[in-house]
Each structure stands twice: as structure tokens, then as C-alpha cells.
Image 1 (spheres, helix red, strand yellow):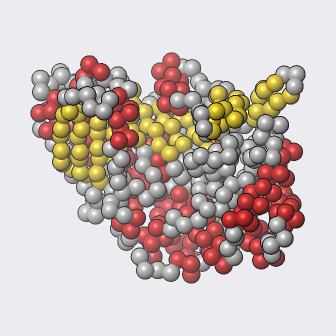
Image 2: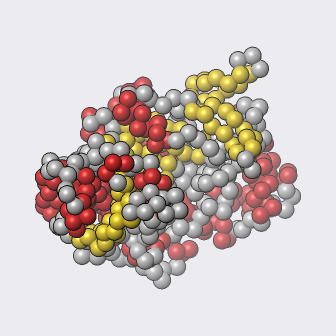
Image 3: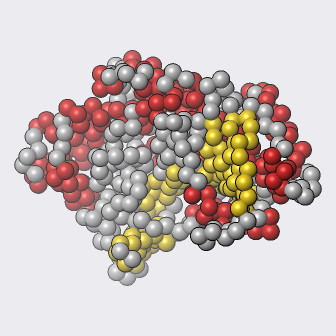
Length: 498
């Protein structure tokens, strides 16, 4: 969404102004007192505590806890962790949350703080549980975008009060829901961060949860045993092996893009491997691999489960439908016609981060790294790949997009550990080097480590390049295909709203 200053609430304007004033003051003689004396409009400081000892290897630091209430139903918790002034690296990092959020993992801040960062995170306003957003548009806005932005604004205030100066650089790192947060920041608030990492990003949020519901309804009617699922995964790996390099052939699917013909071939191979798979199973697989479409218009809502990935994490996560239809609604009765339209209209403008116009982020020198796993059935790669293509269309070419944005699709990586790559370089270090020194990431060193041993060691190249191999040249990049996934219909990703 292109940033329109006229849409900024007046209280937020005053908050930013206050932050600006603070950044030009000298370092406070008593940083704790300076923090405690901060005035936050629509928010308050709950807790400030300094630990002066090294405990369990954790260096001295200050913890600040805030409560922000920009709306009548808002209840946003923020936590900030600050290293000693002499240890601060002049940088702020914002950390994303996961799932429905609603909690803060204080321990996640300590590692970054020990590296010299001032660190901030938020519960996104969804405590105490996933039902917190039922019938509450303020919570929808907070979860969608507002909590992360206000966390960032107030964290910069606190940093300036503590150290007497603003951060020289600010970065954001988040995965899954944190990836949604990352993409919202780049699109809605490009001034917040200099560099952003969006790992397995759930940025196409309402269509993604429609995919969860689609799969839930299918799997309830036609369940698969663990053995059947393993045979289906094996069939996908075997069928796609001809498109793989020798190191991955038959073990994983590094590029799951497929056609209807491929889907039928994988189903046939799965049934050959497992005679217990019935005609009903075959029809269910067509729907699972095909993905949801609108029952009235036939428009694409989301793509299907990737070959070679687990069904277990591809369903559930239905709380967004409760937010719209109520806690007691029978979600298995929802249809993919009018019900999906109602759901999309309610949540889409706040939760989806689909605007390909990153012009303000580009102009300030922002850098963005996106990462998807080829075997991730929880947040499949399709929408992220297509988002990259839409950004390239917007700026005019892939080369121009690559000047500020990289996408890595990691072979065999799921939403966590999977059958493929499970170790990548320090992505924060890469985005910092890119933003601060102008050295863009390219080939990455990627491994699969099991029990301390390297099972797979291969280079990984940014989309659309792919890794090839032969006995003479070894590994080298080749140009891979573009696109190849159905684009989610625009009506299921409505324009962003404040």
C-alpha cells in the first residue's frame, strides 16, 4: 500500500514527532530514568528493569515492557531488550511472532542482544489465545499490521531515550506470521526498517487460511493413514526425480511446480505403490494438490499442497474464520462461495500483505530477502514466488527487482525441519552486508545436517536460478523457469486498508 500521510492517526503523528525530538538529545545520565519518564500516547510503560550481572552467559542488559492501546479493543504487549551502551552496535532489530501470536518469547531476544542489538518484539495484540480476535476489528488491525509498526516506533523512542541517539540501522527478521509482519512493514511502513528478512512468509494471509479450511474439509471426509501419506510423498519424490540433480533425486522435490497431468501421474504412482488408496482417495488428492477455487466463479483462491510435503501441517489453523463467524460456528459447514467472500471482505484488507508497489522502500535503500521451503505445506511457496514476479512486473524486470529483493526457495525445507536443507547462512548478516556495504547476496552455502553430520552440501541460488550438477563442472547455476503457479485472484486479496 502506498503510504499516505493523511491516513496516519493524529496520535501516531505526535508519537513519531516525540521520537524525533528525543533522538537529538544527548545521552541521559540515567538511562533507566529517561525511559521511565517517556510519555507514550495510547500506551504506557509497564516495566523497566536492569540486570547488571552476567547470568547463565547472558550479558548485562535492560528489559522494557510496554502496553499499547491504539483502539478500544487493543491490548498490544511489547518487549524491548537493550544491551549496555558500550556494547550497543547502533542497530535495532524487530523480531516477528508465529501462528496466532498472543505471547512473547523473552528468551528469543537475548541472543540478538548479546550480539549488540537493541531488540523488540510484540504479542501482536492477540493474548490470551487465538479466539481474542472474535468480532473485534481492532484486534484484526493490530494483528495484521498495527502492532508491529507501533512496536517499532516505540522501540525507537526507548532506544533514543536509553542511548541518546536513534539507531543507525534498523532490521526486521520474522518467519511464518513473522513473515507477514515483515512484508507488511516493507509495504505499509517502508520508513521503519532498512533491511527485512521474510522467512516462509504468511503474507497472503486470508487465502492461505482458506487453503487450510479447504484441506481440513477434504481430510475430514476422506482421511489418510500415516502409511498412505508416506506412500503419496514417496510417489511425488519418485515422479519428480527426473527433474532433480543426482544429490536430491528421489529424496525430495526441490521445485514442486506442476501441471494437472503431473498431478494425475503422481496419484497413479501412489495407487500403484499403495493399493489401499481408493477412488475416493484419488479424488481427494486431486483437490488437495489442485488447491481451492471459488465454487461459484471458479476463481483461484490459493494453490495446493506441494508434491513431497506432509499433509499434517496443511490443515487446521482455522481461528481466522472464528474471528469473522464466531467462536461456536461449525467451520466444516462453511462454503467456498459466499462464506469465503464474507471472510475475505472482513479480514483481507488488514491481514494480507500483497501490494507489489515497494517504491518507497526502494527509494530509502531498503533490502528484502524472502525464503520459502519447497516442502512447506503450512505456508507453501506459491504465493511468495508469485509476489516476487508481481514486484518484478511492477519495477520493469527481474534484474531491477534483484537490486533490492531476493527470493530463495530452499530444496526440501518444510515449515521447520524437513527431508532437505536445514542449515543456511546467517541471513541477518547477509541483509546487513547488502544494506550497509552494497554487497548483494547470491550463491548461498546450504546443507542438511543430521546428528552432527553433513548429509547434503550444495549451493543455493536466488530465484529464478536453479542448481545444476554434472561430473565435469560440478555444481553451477542455470536459469530456471519463471512463474508456473496460478495467481490468486485479486478479489481474494483486496486492497489494504487502515
